Amino acid sequence: MAREIELKLSLDEDDVAKLRALPLLAAGAEYRGSVPLHNRYFDTPGQALASHRVALRIREDGGRYIQTLKTRGASQGGLHQRNEWEWELPAPELDYRLLAEASWPQALSDASVQREIVPAFRTDFERSTWWLRRPGCAGDEALIELVLDLGEVTAGAAGRDALCEIELELKAGQAEDLYAVAQELAAEVPLLVSDISKAERGYRLLRDGRCDAAPRPLRLGISARDAFIGSAEQALNRVSRGFEQWQHGRNWQDALAASQGLTQLRATLDCFSSLLPETVPASLLPGLAQLSWELDGALAWQRLLPLMDVDLAARWQASQSPDGAARLQRLLRTTLVGRLLLDCSRLLIIEDWPPEASQSVAAFRIMEQS
Image (cartoon, rainbow, N blue to C red; front, side, top):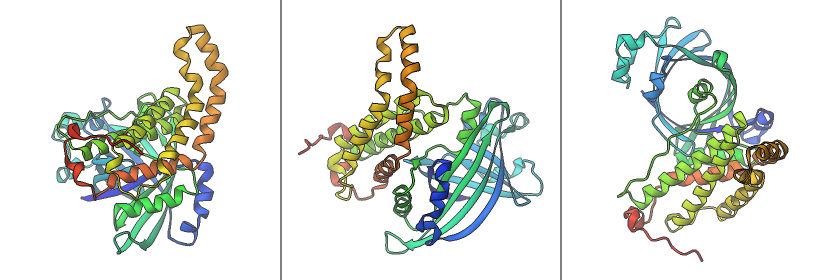
């Protein structure tokens, strides 16, 4: 079993050439080549595997067939930690005996369930790989693998979804080293922190375009630190998923969800500001305020819809939606969004917390800002 620690970022296909030409990759990295990868993902018609938070696939890689099982694991602000098992196969057919070596849910081991497992969707993409060696934040050498995946996710009659994403995987070093590389990229290319896996993209096609993360309530008795992380993480996910899903389906409810997540994120940072280190960029809060202002401008027409009857609302939306969409798309084509979301998600991996972070959040006092 391997444990992946990776940071996933999405980008527009129009920016791929600019990404490849960045000095960080063109001159500062070891190019490892490009390969086509073809993957079939499996599930039952009722999506039993998805309900148990596992992904099962067979990958074709240069004539080799690799069966892979992934569990959801932990995810914070685009930084993923997943358990993964791989087995080489003689042919592109599932071997259920191998799954006994992994965290395969007992409920899926029944032969009657396994007989229902069929191909659900596929991903086909070109993967380009670079290795980046650089001084790590802890004084050692960091080795980061950067892969660029360019292709599509398809689910038969359910449709297709373009795939254009970066994965930064930590081979040696600290999670902070991943963020340092990501922020260098985000300073030059419009990026979005992504919490959506390739498997989720496939299920989104099967579920009429939805790929929503379930909210997790904060419980009585948790510490101030855990309350900050829980609230900030969920807010970041709402923002990043809202933006990404708006780009996928142009559903204005997704853009509104991103706006709500941004409001929650700013409130979280304001409430727990006394816990945060001095290394937090001074530009973070003003930048989030600017992002909120820009996003609210693109959504202003939406705020009036509840006041209108059905006929007026339909005409209002028809007249205002194109300009709002153009304004939102211009915002997402800047580097502002990616830089700010990376700065925020970086706060989720803080290790040195002040003593008051361990107290119950119910006893935590919000400090007045000077």
